[in-house]
Image (cartoon, rainbow, N blue to C red):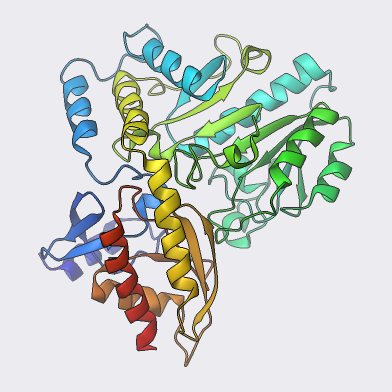
Amino acid sequence: MTQEAYIQREALHGAHNYHPLPVVLSKGEGVHVWDVDGRRYFDFLSAYSAVNQGHCHKRLVNVMIEQAQKLALTSRAFYNDKLGEWEEYITRLFGYDKMLPMNSGAEGVETALKLARKWAYKVKGVARDKAKIIVCNGNFHGRTISIISMSSDPDAYHDYGPYTGGFVNIPFNDTVALEKALSDPDVAAFLTEPIQAEAGVIVPNDGFLKTARELCTKYHALFIADEIQTGIARTGRMLAVDYEHVNPDILILGKALSGGMYPVSCVLANNEVMLTIRPGEHGSTYGGNPIAAAVSMEALQVIQDEGLADNAMAMGKLFRDKMSASHSPMIGEVRGKGLLNAVTVRPKGGKTAWDVCLEMKELGLLAKPTHEHTIRFTPPLIITKEQMQEALEIINQAFGKF
């Protein structure tokens, strides 16, 4: 089959809820992917930061095969021999009492919302059905009805009402607005991404997260960090909140938690929060399955063994330095932390960020626009200096064409 035939088959039989680049991939290894014609590309999206450890990391593949041959799924109706090991590993690694396993990032966020509301009623003493959760404009936490109810993006929420209530939107990176909202005694929590990735890699001012943490403590509200994209070494620290030494009351992880091998997410919290949910009140058939547990532990260990946070820090600085020095009139702001970066694109001669991405594809590098005028650049964290320099040449060549 030709690439066009693959694309047309999806268009004919699949929902039209994505707008992919016109490339059909069939293989991945390390920082590269190959299309069905055998052409190799740098992957500078990393499945939205799920493939931090690189495509098909040998250790993850081996662990997944080994566990799949023994036991794949039990449901939580029974114990299995891997879940407790994973829970112990991850709670010790991140410093929490308890972990609640789920599958997708959106499920992780929904779990955090439920925990925050339950805590508000059971611990803080908020009147039933009055709990509020503060969120930020520009957020992206998933696609469920409740999550899009807190979105400020019309593409995310338009024509999906009626919406879930109980959310208070404030500007991102605005501690004055946050304190005003927190002064309401019915507020259960403040939910934020440390860096707004989907919004275009919007990095808050230094001190925003620390001040937010202090304000939540002052007003007896939970601080919830959505580190689904920013976590697992993507920003040059194991967690993005580590830059300001912030300990969230609830931490949401996903994506690179499995190295892209399997849908895995989880929520971490201490006993005061986590134990407000009792047996039968929340769960998941696949959450905590043996494959997820085994692969996640190995994925986290790979991050540590291979020093990927430090590499993300160094390679991210190289990327931003080189892109900031570019003379292309189409390149606007270059921003990010670690290997979570974005370049804003000034349209020129009718050419936009999409056209730049198409040209990069022709030259052997895959990236995708977000919010029309911004290109997000997020390669696997295993990328070497030589590979980054080669990729930067491709990116600058693509911009140079216009």
